[in-house]
Length: 246
Image 1 (cartoon, rainbow, N blue to C red):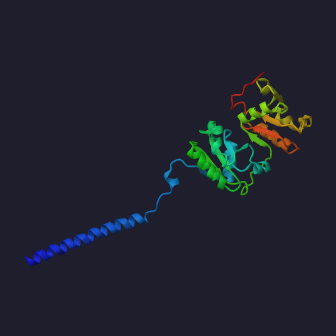
Image 2: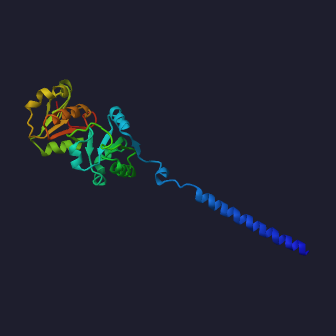
Image 3: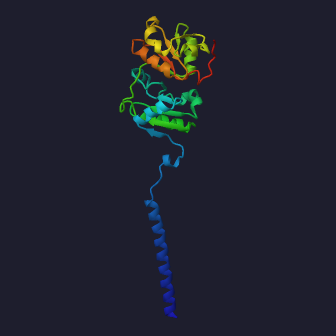
């Protein structure tokens, strides 16, 4: 009887030891398990793009929005072609200007990739679905330009506020005849160098085309030849509902 009681006590003690060991073991394993980052837990996050990848995206995706989030001074010194400027500090206050791009691909860049990463996070948190943070312009040679890239609403505002501005449609004559902005004159891209002597360098020069590509090339030619007030609309007549005349 005494042996039986002693055996029961030992059995109970052994059970407690095994139970405690199991609990401690579980705690130990849980503490060793790596925690997932908030970014990995978030199914929607921005993606990184090297300079080479960014250039390929620019060539393949004509509807790509390129967003320079540096300050205005850095932008004026040189920016990626077709890149509009909204500094990272101003971005949250100007998200409504980008509403039409929520379902399109957005490529964000700065000098080093740090400010653009912050901007990319802001965009993702506000419902922009396809956002890339590109390698900075200090780390990759994109071939920068010095004219100003603007959106269609910005262009229309600039035209309405500046009656002396020269508005150039960079499409071919046949395209121009199908419909154009009432303020525009027609100088096809291929005639830019030949006709630029007729333009006043002291006036704002605003260009557009079908997609923003040819007008961007024309803007580059003008800026390389001493024109300092050059603006290119990244939104062409195929992408924005302009009020056109014939």
